[in-house]
Image (cartoon, rainbow, N blue to C red; front, side):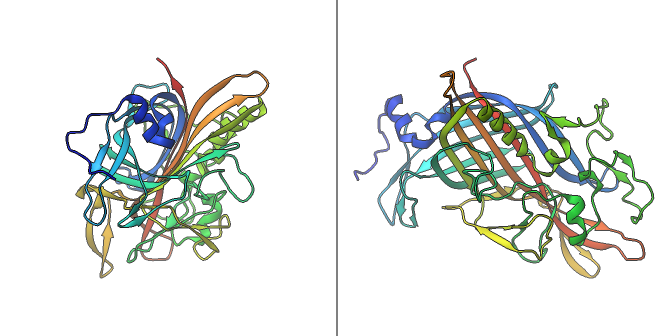
Length: 404
């Protein structure tokens, strides 16, 4: 390969799109709807957590970077990256308030020999670099692969077709405070059924049959006397959660928000649409461990997922990372809301209706962000116990390419 000059003339747009390969269809503007679930600390209300739930509207804009991005090599010759910039903006549906804004870059990387990093054709190594205003920077890496068939839906042994990840379940899961790693709950788990297997109090926020506000007398002692879940203490007051979203029961949405994506695709399949496209599976670390049986608890059988990677990671400002404190005579990490792991699947979907001839392009994604923060829980007759948990923050959306 010829050495890459620092004064190369940028190629034409057709060449750039060709070099983007499986990322090429992302170029353009996307608009649509989605759902956001985040468990966050709640120091203000003196309770264990606040479960924030939002129906969302989203715009996502991609622009191709108009030239190669040279990376200089010592152990091998230089390589060229090709990429896109993006700007993601998410708002609460029906409101003007911003929930999330994220500028960033997607890139493709060729297979390399130093270090040896490769995937078989026609797959491609891809990475996403993003900056989040809370004080996080992420580098999430993995693989792009073409697919033919209905995306997102459960198929064979796959919980979500063309995703490498067997679960985007929202139930909290135990994290070992003194060792890295986490075990993600199986798809279909519910907090109500999983709680007896986890060394922590049950979390009424995840049970939509329990109204927000004061919790009736039960096995819990203060300070956990409030069920803090949207729309608790919102200003101005918000309406209660709907019974369902697009026909999906709200409890199913809370357990596993990706059910909303599955409903969108199933509706299209019922109308006669078929699909082909590209899946993008990315994570900040590998391997990832998942429980295989719903509600089995940390002692249940597990499966390991490996995502092709060539780096990756997360940086947090110190406020999010917190500090170490002496709890019960032992130094414990006490985070405010430290981002520990990110994994996601994006589906670029070309939909075609065999009955009407109508075609369009759709983008769906499901993203899991793990926030680490502890609680001190109290059970009647027992002393306060420090419990460090992983708290899922899940975002899903269905977007269509827009020309406005």
